[in-house]
Image (cartoon, rainbow, N blue to C red; front, side, top):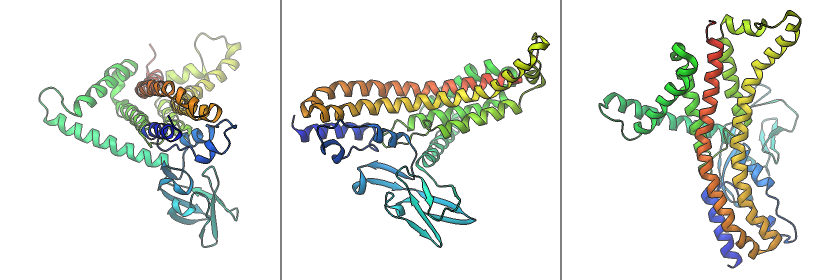
Length: 345
């Protein structure tokens, strides 16, 4: 296979799975003796940005500009991210001069404090997930009101998931008090699930692989758990039963640390699993370019079938992980709430 055919095959695979990742001609062909470094492209994919990158690179890239919303010293500045011209152009608003660095961070050149409220790629993706969820639930709700037999269409997919969350996750952990927390736990489950699945689509954002998003989800769980906790829960923390008085100064700090380590574990688990899946898939694709830079076109062609098979395998594994991580996050959240609200026997 000639060089053009190889590039065509690899480009098709990248566009099929992750078209927002591009590998520059300069990087892969400038110096054949230098091994291709996939880290910048992979990190670009899993990080947030002020524009939605679809394909291409540099001035030839195809991107969707997103709104930049900045509050600087009490002044509101709103403009599209395309004004930065991929970081090559400064934006002047009155006496304020904004620039964007290579990592996509916005700075004010006069060293004024900035509050960045921009609609980034992850934020836009969450709005898209909200629209998808409203679409699914509104249609399902209307169908369930009219349906007298077995569920059909979208309802046949949504109803089993709702019943699964209610009967197999929430009820066993919260008991008779489950109805109070069911709306939150259902929203949590479907929010994570929809964003996980959207993140696997071509050109999608890595929302649940962003630690800021998982931090907020875990913080909400922390607030809901501790503000719903009863006297028995706090009694076990500040006066652990069966613990000698001499060990109280040791056990109470440990129990207090446990209050925060449980949601911290939720944050890291979701972030790490989703990010790892994206990184593995992109790393497997990058092996083709590494083989080309190290062994030439023949080496890349020889490795590409193996790489493609592993990518397809990992892609289907990631679909399973998308459901699994939504289940685990909701299960542990309901477990923490149940432990905090269960009455002492």
